[in-house]
Image 1 (cartoon, rainbow, N blue to C red):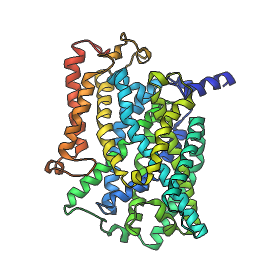
Image 2: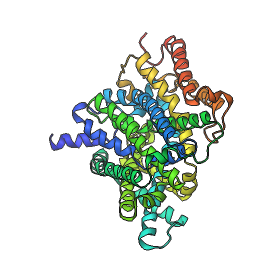
Image 3: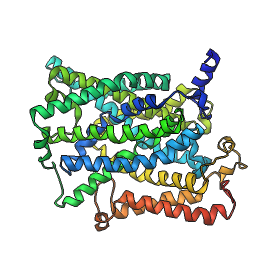
Image 4: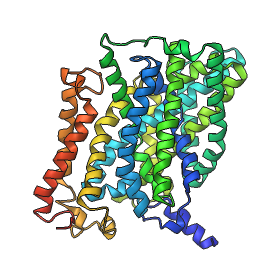
Length: 468
């Protein structure tokens, strides 16, 4: 590839234009490394500790792998496969069912979740640094001042990686993932030798409800939330994949199986130590040298994961007219400013991180089902690519004043459907939750309603560019 072609390839990775297959950088192995590094970031350990509040180790594994599998398959169908086929990110493709202005509105909701995750991961890296300093110096750096200070430093470093783009993320992942997987194996061996998985399997959950079936359903629901949390990211990465195969199967390997290994370790550690924070149990379980190494590698994995979130969401922000032609530095700065501000309340956000899992189900499940129905059932996997970049009312994707009222209606009404079963913030449930999970009910509702209303409204009124 010539220097000029390389420059074009580099520029298009920071823009909304479709990436041609000849310009795509990620093969199956490359994307597997990137997505596995993304999957095994500390949030999996943290999610595992949360599941341990409700279920024992065996049920945590079952809930994690089943919830993630369902969510990731739906996500891959809604974002990865279309993005890999046409070379556009998930936010650009959402124009086809939300409309040009509908996508901009959705970006605001998405930013709330992704900025929250970025703050959580920066805080986890910050706490890891503090644990290392405490162990090496014998002093206490655990005050909120140091948590915020180190969190801000981590956020700036994540920003730097994002500015360098997918190539640096790929390099980091190709180095860190193999080494980190070795650390995971060592953790498994240490727990097997010192405690034994048989004993862990018989340890009760930390703070369960009285009803065992209810405990499993909540763990399953949280696992669905963990899986759906990847929505903003995998579409932006899939557009860089050379084939649909490379964009789909690594999601299963990384976001389901690798993530479940991390979740299982997190659950086991929480049951052993009684604390879901990986920064607090790495050194006690692994010992000084290995624990410090593990914390360093986990921190690097978190930086890589954060960089992916910042990259993909910032790419989506270019849908906003004021940012469309702005330099990549300015676009990413719009994302980072609320992140820097939020880090001053990092401990509060971290301690209530499970809010994000509930919001992920509430936000990403409806959008995923609408996307699947729209692309596979209503459009037969065909897009008129020019309509994504035609911002005028003449665009087929303009719908009504830039909004698709069918998608908006389905998305808004999915919220009371979800709350009929479960409050995602307080985890208060109704009797109906025992018979159908909230996310499952929302998925069925959105699939049926969007298909019927699209046929009755959009097709009949010839809006949205659907084949008549």
